[in-house]
Length: 455
Ligand SMILES: [Zn+2]
Ligand SMILES: [Zn+2]
Image 1 (spheres, rainbow, N blue to C red):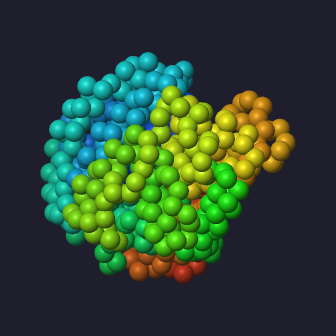
Image 2 (image 1 turned 90 degrees about the vertical axis):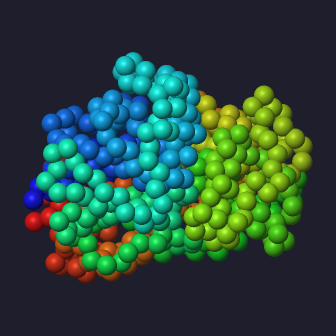
Image 3 (image 1 turned 30 degrees about the horizontal axis):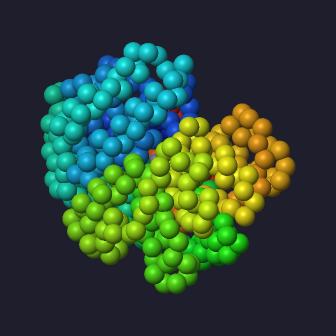
């Protein structure tokens, strides 16, 4: 039986994530991302590697831009593929891709060819909504490839990462491959954590975002640190800016702030949030009973929030009264709300900035976090000075190193492919598994190289 695995983007990094699987001549593309920072030839996946191979279905694990942002580009090369996702992911696609269009137009990336940029057109995106088939978790999906020698069964499992996120189990001729997508086993504030089968699989393709981070503080310890930080800043009359990804992290952070206020751990301060994250929150609310939740029925739109007004980024009321501002982007990408807002924010000594997620080492957010207080530094290519406090908190939507290893030990794959993490993260997990499961073949796949899934 033919079994082939090729990484088309996101090998040894978190980038334009996309992978290809050939299962007995039925071809699958899993995810098609846009790199969060790069705007060169690695900004989008490399579909030239599969030009002459069968492609029958596209499976989207979740709607984060590093998995979804390359979909219009993928469709150019593979216009005939069936598109498979969960229902919430299908709903989130529209909002997220519209934002990608806006982002690419604003950045005017010189290194992305014009004909590629032209694919990012609002009318194309509207059509996408009709093309994506939305499924429930654990529903049986049969894919019959046009040249396939046998049907492939596909099942989407709750990956616990963000609303609608899925791990994908493929079964063909009795052989199984599990692609984790982005995964979180531990309960967050809204989502209860992944629900995956823990039986043996022949091949496991696993994300490794936190693979090199050992024994991080627990979520409760981080919550306490955040509460202490907010109290310190608001006690001296300042406001806290939380640069946060619009999809997933914002909703978790809103619930977290709401819980801290309800428990009296922080004062009831005005919370400001942006338009795009509001749209996403309402999609979260649409599924407040339909998909597993820590607190079924809880609606984010019930949390009192004020609008971040674009024209008032430098003059809003948060500059006059202690407030919490939850603004995208999480990495303070140039031109984003958090990037613009921070220009005045960082010069205000009694204010604070609380980062909540992963920061690409090339991002403005990373530069700011590592900048010396009250000294000049270079921020997105310009000279700046930070007078406010800045702190980073870990509310990861990705599994801990310990949980990832525990999962591999349970499913005992014959082959393990490690993706979606930097080299250190992938190697660190790989080394541990080689020690504990000597029968398992461990592979850190290279971009564009073909590997066999089953021997
Ligand atoms: Zn993700
Ligand atoms: Zn990702």
